[in-house]
Image 1 (spheres, rainbow, N blue to C red):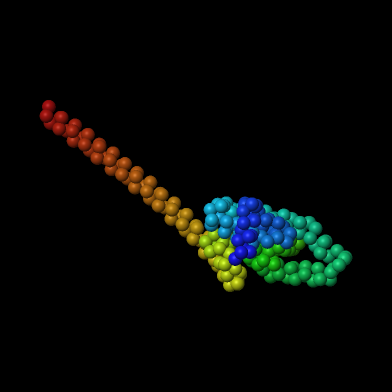
Image 2 (image 1 turned 60 degrees about the horizontal axis):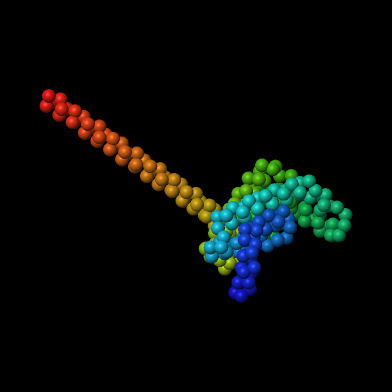
Length: 230
């Protein structure tokens, strides 16, 4: 508890740079992206940061970082991994495993990779190395980055680090399911709010129309009375 308090205290100085760290991890640079997002979300729960801005920065950093990693992987990745030098055999073997993984799962591999800590750092590179069509990569990557940022951001905001650790324990399937539920809930809430506003506007229009009709009717009656009196 004291350690976490010290981390929070030190992290306050970084502010919105915390979720930006995710971009480094996505490019392939070993970085505590997930921890940075949860920490920023916890800070937001104390009023020091805005949670929606934290989630926006996290999602944007994930998507931009992955796109850079994809381009690097597509241009130099295979040559780097197959080049002679230390651990060449292991590197070639790892590349072969990545090739089979992307052949089997395709675009879904990009989405799933966002949710697995040790895979997340290499997913974009592997997508580029395997020459996945860019539009296909971008769509799956954006879907993964946005849902992941929403899920971990809101969990950190409402449940703190303990909830985030539970999410890690229950597995990637449950994490993805939760992310989908969160996104669906937000979409439902937005649509409901939009319908409510539209309904209120419609009621106001109907009310104005009734008042206008009553006014016209009153004017007509008075006109008839004047005509009858004369």
